[in-house]
Image (cartoon, rainbow, N blue to C red; front, side):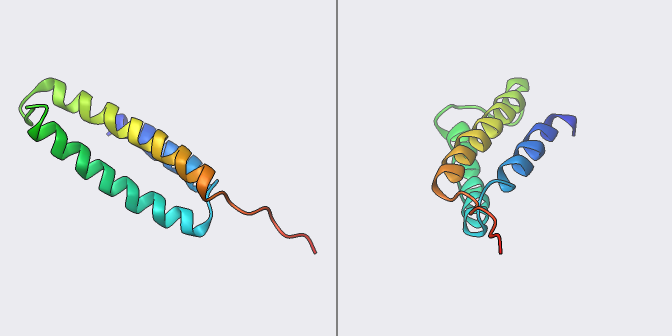
Length: 85
């Protein structure tokens, strides 16, 4: 469980910096990219769940997906500055 804490911390940092639309796009995109990544690992990379290296490759890929997709979302859907009245 400790291994996945890095992803949770990155999620919180990214979600604080994107707009409401960006949050939805970020979460949906992250799910789609993660499913595509697992499908790639199981088909093209010829890995299976029994390999010890599969877990580490999966965690590394998940962290990479969070970072790359998060940076894209931060630049495309930034949080608007607060309105001062």
